Image (cartoon, rainbow, N blue to C red):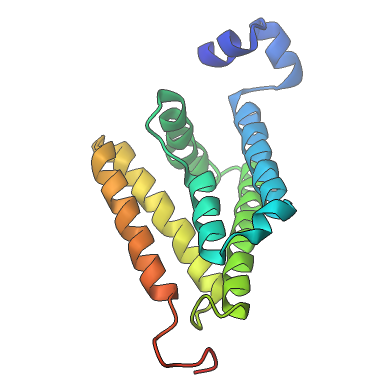
Length: 177
């Protein structure tokens, strides 16, 4: 809250006039990040990229880098505070489900586009999107709990390489195979 007050240059009373607590502030930030992802996805200038590049950009935009203190703290709040709290808080759970559903759909849609363009081999777009989200959270959780960001960066690069391999169509096979 100290950082929020300093950044906003508002008093605690003024901030709490808009948000009853830190959970609502964080939820509003989650909503804003999803709105930014959706706006990026709908941007027609990005449609000229290869599907692989669009997928990588979406993954990077969603998981980003957590080398700055602010990104590291936002990740910590999500994975260690709000995600576990959502088990007991139906309102928070519903908000996180909507957010994750939207991101899952964006990823699955890009994978489906890649399959339609014959850039990707035949995979289950929804299952692959779920795997991407789970792996991203796992890498970030590992970085938080071990404190080794360099290890997390290596894991992230390895995951992207393996994802590329799994999405690449087999040589000599048709997309229908």
